[in-house]
Amino acid sequence: MGILDRMQRLVRANVNDLIDRAEDPEKMIDQILRDMESNIVTARSQVAAMIAQEKELEADANESSHLADEWGAKAKRAVDAGKDDLAREALRRKRDSQENADAYKKQHDVQLQTVDRLKSQLQALESKYQQTMAQRDSLIARQRRAKASQKVAEFSANLTPLDASSELDRMERKIRTNEAQAAALSEMNESSVDAQFRELDYDVDIEKELEALKGGSSASAGQLEAGSSSDTNE
Image (cartoon, rainbow, N blue to C red; front, side, top):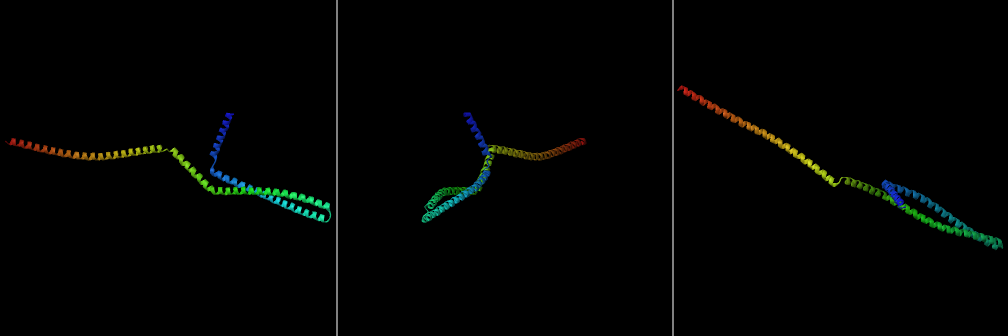
């Protein structure tokens, strides 16, 4: 029995969970309103039928009471006419009519109480229907806000602050790397240009020095030639 109870409880729990998941509050509210409207129509029909019965009982009670009065009057006329047997029959019928009138009166009183109770229930149902209709838009708006908040919460749960921070740090490191590479390339370009200008300056110095050497060599050679000429003349 213990295992069966647990299995039944498990089945009920799973069924209830499936029902909860399948329920759409917006659709459920509209369905509740349709059910309430249908119940109101049925209740109105029942109240109308009970009112009709109350009217019939009232009419029967009045008719029986009227007959009792008529038979009472006939009994008096029979007594006045000296017809005691006829008077007795009239009195018996008066009694029967009065008993019927009393019975109808009791039923009518009960029917009146039933009609009043049904009218009160119908009024409460109609009031609840109007209240639900007035709250429908508000309830649906609350449901939509709740669903939107739930979606945002799910997105936030999937993207934790730690993951976002790590991703931002990775992007920042990549940007710093790109900045460093750009600075290195710029520095290399500037160094290359400076080196070219230094080479130009170096070449100018070499040319000047070469020209100086060439000039010195020419002067020495001229002096040597002049000395040789002097020695020959002597």
